[in-house]
Length: 292
Ligand code: G1P
Image (cartoon, rainbow, N blue to C red; front, top):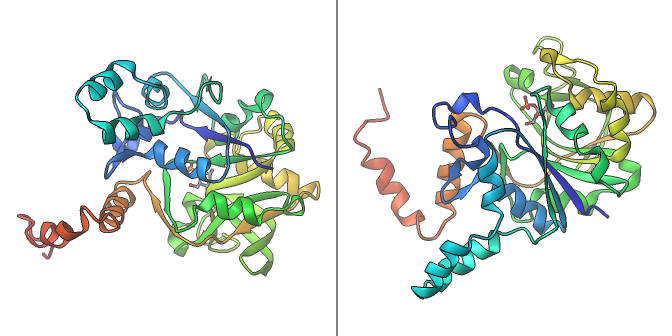
């Protein structure tokens, strides 16, 4: 049973400066909701009941976003704006189910995950990186929870990426594949295209055994001088804990980049019945011609 999810939200978001100077990058909006809300809604849909955010200074807006807002709620109530009221109330994480932990220094994803070590009782938990927005009929994490069994050890959602992009990801060395599952014999963080073992890359959805905290606790520096989650997964593979890649059904947008964020906005607008009718005219009437 996967009941706890960890959301690392301590990153600086420097790719989106100056937008992220005073607001967390996880609060960047895609169509009408901040990125972190998509991730939390996906987790809720997968049955998650405890939400652990690994934060840093300047990320308070995330905590506020999932809290109640009595001032705003009473104004909406007084004005009879019941739809808006329902909308903002549904965002709340119920009291006692959200935890905010400070990561003091940006030491890497592996270190961020390790910061949650004292607060997970179950044998396995979910990890969601809000940068990755996934549009799917059955939410990605729900697909993973349904597919996961203890024999899978650690599980990570994977996609195939162009060879020249493998250096942005954790990449699997594949032993076997069966259906949607890929059994890894090794995993390497941000390899060069020339030495990468495959083009099958991990994206920001994981189901992890809590025993991952042990190798992460060694605080070994990996790629980019950071404590890498991928290295923890590799150490566990060496101790015969499997790593299973999961090829989910759905579209993933890398909202950690401007292009991915733009794609996500267009794709979600196209799927929104209110916005869809306007999309074509918006594109064709652009004052800046796209060609040339
Ligand atoms: C992190 C992980 C990497 C993974 C990626 C998915 O990298 O370290 O293994 O493939 O997330 O988005 P980051 O994007 O933080 O550099």
